[in-house]
Image 1 (cartoon, rainbow, N blue to C red):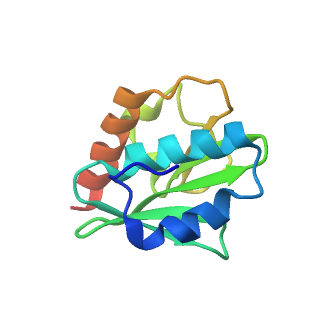
Image 2 (image 1 turned 30 degrees about the vertical axis):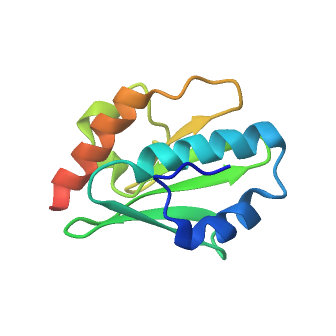
Image 3 (image 1 turned 90 degrees about the vertical axis):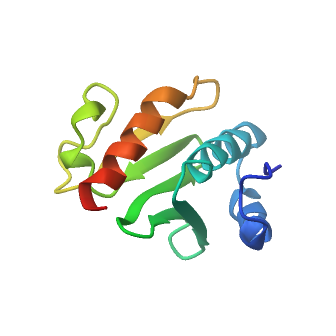
Amino acid sequence: MLTSVVDPVYSRAFAELVAPLPPATAELTARLVALVAAHPGLSGKVMTGWKSVNFRHGAAGHVCSVFPQADRVSLYFEHGRLLENGEGLLAGDGLKKGRYLRLVPGDDIPVDRIGILLSEAIALFA
């Protein structure tokens, strides 16, 4: 299920994270995690208690998390309120600092826009 860019150290934990999900949601989660994991400088770890995959950058710290749920997958940016290029893509105006992109099975993943947001989020603190 996971592509080679996803750290094999947590592939078993990832499989356990998505096991209860419908196949389409599990596939969407795997694709989104692989996309984020491929971004330069990010390393991911399954956080069992949070039911998420959290991504850190050596200089910027916690950048984002992927939260899969039965009917959707959210990409949460820790400091999303500060991101300039999230307009129209990120939700969560009621949140103090974070913002998120919500995808449902069948959605196209906005690969280029996510790449821009990841770079911007890293640049905030790196």
